[in-house]
Length: 228
Length: 308
Ligand SMILES: Nc1ncnc2c1ncn2[C@@H]1O[C@H](COP(=O)(O)OP(=O)(O)OP(=O)(O)O)[C@@H](O)[C@H]1O
Ligand SMILES: [Mg+2]
Image 1 (cartoon, rainbow over the protein chains, first blue to last red):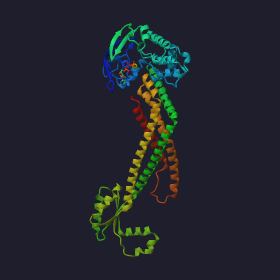
Image 2: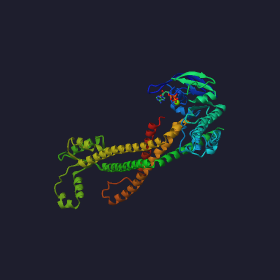
Image 3: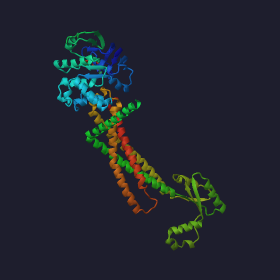
Image 4: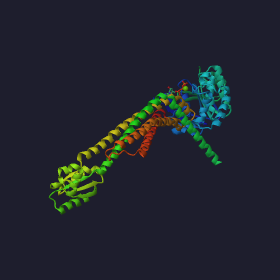
């Protein structure tokens, strides 16, 4: 699914966020990305979905050559990847339904398929009955579930989540984790950056720890490893 | 099998196209104040562009009519013999730019002068006096704007006493035409840029208001054209809306002018270009300029604002 070779990223201001990352992530894996603030987790994620370009190295994501990719090919990479962020990124003027449908309109899906698929994914995240609500009328956890529904609407093979539970209380976080596990259970690769020691130590999965832009640990069924 | 798949893609494109139009209309409506401002700017620009075009093309038309009438009268020396007079004619025929050469004897010249003066000619009793006029060649040119240089050349010929061509009038007409054209063009270009600037600002505001939407569109895999199209539609719409009033004013104004000019017309060389098709051609030009500046304005702001 993801093959990274000696990826380096230097931002225009001179910050070296990634200093040679080499990693393979297979289809269907569930991976935690841990590390202190500023370690380079978000940068790693941005390179995967083409939001930042690596300075050097090689990355293959779901068959796309991300480093040598032209700008106009980025949308097609994004259609194979679902992304979820700490701040949900929902459109406040649109209903839950419209927020999810948006992702399908953009790829020019037919109205019939859009209706069917939107209700399907809303059902999957347990928000079928709130389709007509606007984001402000939902709790944080519910908003994140809408964002997840939008991320998986296009049947992506890869879901990346940058601190998806960062803004949520523990109970709500567990709910989100249950949904991510379900998605992973259906065969989708999940990569999740997190600062939650509890989650990582409870739901044991592969853990990749980054420090100073380098991988310092890559452990199957690993634990968080930092005092938080 | 193939046919079905082609039908599906075509249907999808039509739907997407409708979506872009809908989004473009929505934006235009949402920023109604900015829309009004830029439509106002386009309107002002196009009214002036239209007025200049009408003025310049008509001046051109009148000038062409006058140019047709511009002729050089070459006065042959009074002392020239018949063969010498004929040699002047031959020489004139040989010139490059000459369309026609007509010989007019001094008697014909006198007759023309007398009939030109009408009754007064008789009163002077010119016919009874000795004819003071020269034999003359009247020449017309292929390119009348060369009149002055040609005249200056011809006056140096042997046996040519003088040339007449309404010096000041001809030169002034050509000069005025050139000045009007240049000043008009400069003004129009300045106005066009102002309108483009205002349109691009309006669209910048729409883009700004929709930054988050655009960010999310990019996140879920929208192509740059999918994102751009609504803004193009908006720009085009601003241009078209801005050309409505100018076209109305043009049709009404020119109709009025056309009706009244023919009523007061004294000089048959001052004729306006005929209402149809002239007005329709200018209307086409106006709407085209409107659309072009609208699209240009949106291209500029979309390119600056979306790093895509
Ligand atoms: N757009 C940017 N321009 C310049 N420097 C950046 C940019 N984004 C991140 N950085 C820098 O790169 C380094 C890695 O940042 P990154 O966001 O990847 O860390 P992180 O591991 O996600 O941290 P956190 O846990 O706080 O989210 C930091 O030093 C940060 O300041
Ligand atoms: Mg981060």
